[in-house]
Length: 116
Image (tube, rainbow, N blue to C red; front, side, top):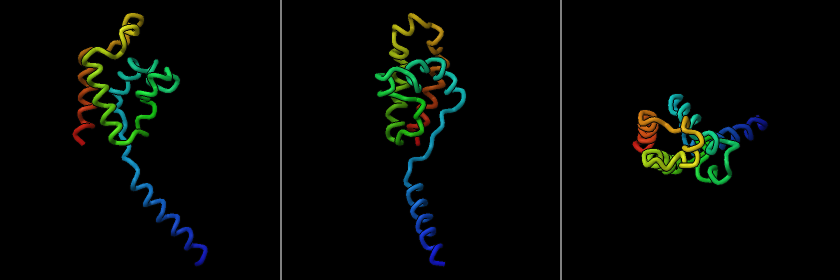
């Protein structure tokens, strides 16, 4: 019985800690496919250090809810303003430029994060 008491406290501690972590928000497959095609060279693991400091899509679930909201809002606005991908990437790799429908799909997803 004495051996079970420390295990019980460990279990309670784990439950308390796990309940305080932010909920995981996965990127939907359709949006993830678009982001991989358009943003992968810079904003996923292995991308440029400068870009990863601003947004690392490989670590999306590690961001706090507030960080995800801020980044989601920025993703949508930069795509709509055609600031991303940057002009140099647009010139070299026009196939990476998301279509208007793809931008709309991403913004619909990012908008859903802001509603929660």
